[in-house]
Amino acid sequence: RLEVDRNDVFFDSFRALSKYTGEQLRGPLQVKFKREDGRDDGGLTRHWFMLISREVVNPAYAMFTLLGKREAYQIHPASKHQSHYLDYFRFIGRVWGKAIYDGFLVESHFSASVYKFILGRELALEDLVHVDLVYYNSLAWFLENDIEAAELELVFVLEEEAMGQIVKVPLKEGGDTCAITNENKAEYVQLAAMHRLVGSVRPQLEALRAGFYEVMAPNVLEKFSEGELELLLHGMPVIDIEDWKKHCEYRAGFTDTHQVILWFWEIVDDWDQEMRARLLQFVTGTSKIPTGGFAGLYGANGPKRFQIIRVFDITRLPQANTCFNELLLPPYPTKELLADRLTQSVYDCGDVFMLK
Image (cartoon, rainbow, N blue to C red; front, side):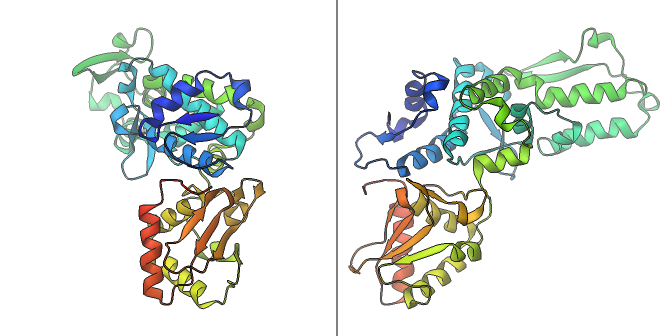
């Protein structure tokens, strides 16, 4: 049982999970948020995975850095200046491993190079494209041009900023006296790329991977690609309205031709991806979709499709039972009122669980 304060979810969860071995973490997990009502039949656990995966990339912790507008994160080299930083990365790895082990999703995406490292796959210069395109282009220039003719007089040393100072980092033994030539430039490019992807954050990556495999058996994922690992962790990134409709079920008097349901899908169809994700999160506890699309949604007791259930009190707001992917929707008399009430619920009630 995991009892945490949502206002201190990272450190509370870190302290709580540190008490358990990897083997113990393979057992059932139940989550309770302090000072909140609600029994965990799966929905609170899903919500906890969403919260913790958002919190680990909080800029205040300086553990990850956002890669431009790609909505993916890379380990921040400055994270090594935090006390207990390796314990934190091991904890993150355990959380990610537990998510896959139990079939839950997390939200914050890492760069492909992080997934490749976890899987033990070889990294290449091309992996740098999505991490630092400017640096990739600079290294690619080395491969495509006559280095000796350019008379750059470079050696196997990189310069990096550390705590406000510039430090020199040799890429290999004796690198400070080894000149880059046309003959060895490919070696330099490979070493420089690997340092940017791995070398500068290797202890953090190794701690992350170690924590991950405390929960997950390495042989289970040995044939997976980094893309497949990402899908296991995060589900499908784009919400397909037609797939959502196709795998939705209706109860208590609603049908796919009921006027309120027709209005509902018109409203959702007009929403952008963020708003659709908020609705999905409100009803299921997560804003991501399983690998198999909406057909792969799970509830507390196994596969459970998205359901819209009619309730008759039109004075109430729409409510949700996240443990069973249920939207409790009153039959509002107009499309405008439905849109207003639905938006209000999604924004005002999406992060606090009071329903059992």
